[in-house]
Image (cartoon, rainbow over all chains, first blue to last red; front, side, top):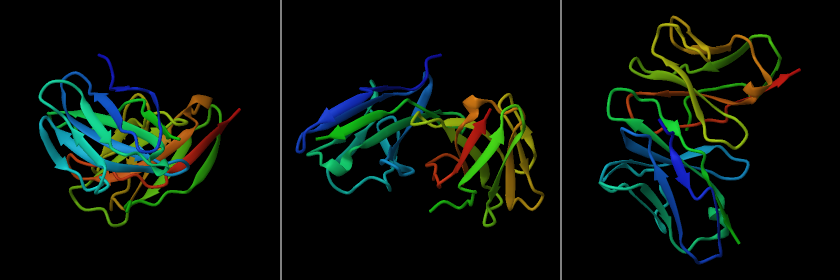
Length: 114
Length: 109
């Protein structure tokens, strides 16, 4: 059973460009979470999604950031008009629909804004 | 804010047991204790969780005090590959994980 997949693993964007980060959850998992880890800082929750629904977006910056988890395909974290402060590692995690609550993390996408 | 307190760092000799403490004095009756670890910039890895009974799996053991105000993660025979930041998290049900600063465990030969 393949684990959580994220792509790209590394992404370089210039200031003002858009960044799209993709997350494919483990097979059978319908819950997806996004976390951000700024350099030398801890992991911070951003958003929790189920298929086609945003359940908790309390950690999402109010502007430029959006997330979706469509009925088909991967979850997407989109950052518009990136700034240098967006440079970070972005991790996706998934969990199944059952009462199993553990979250399984992907390897992360390292975003560098130049 | 994280609801747990952990020492910032610990050392352990290779082959010995590593005992990582966690205080969660404000834990609610329906909150579980979870442990994750992050090995140098990789994605966090689930280790174990428990409610009030001690738990053991192939990776570690979790000892929760009777009053549930603290717990200890035990790695019975630490190896160099166990060097990582270990996070103790309390949460109820599904939903976000709130990571604190964790304990940086260094396993030394």
